[in-house]
Length: 193
Image 1 (cartoon, rainbow, N blue to C red):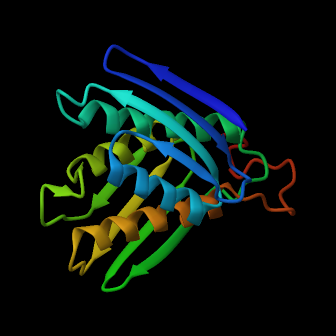
Image 2 (cartoon, helix red, strand yellow; image 1 turned 120 degrees about the vertical axis):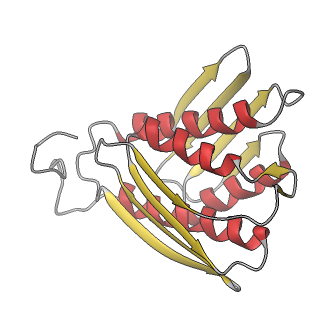
């Protein structure tokens, strides 16, 4: 289990992460719907994740949500080290009733986010939906990974978000998983990620 912390004038965040866990989580972001999404992410990725976060919610949710994405990305970056033996890329198509999310990730050292997701309302539960983009941008930039995310045909924003975070967990699990054939191999023709 690795620990990653970030403290600014706007937020204070601590993450404990075991990439090769069993899906146990203890999440406290002060945003109930984000707690739920990160619990889904941990369960579907089988990551053990503890997260305690506080921020200037009296201003708005932006700083906290973005910084949580940053710190989780940093935690995965630290946990994966030099990337030896990992699959590097992963993808998953997750249905959630009428909703469908497709999430693909490449932990290849090149941060990029393609976010083709639309929400109908400004909020889902108590989470500002526009900030889901900022969460994934912070994550992508700090894990240095390429993310392609699309969702389709969601009747409700709740199902849309659930499909996204479940797909996120399962795709990242595939990318982080060790391949026994790779052993000490870095999955890049460059020999470096």
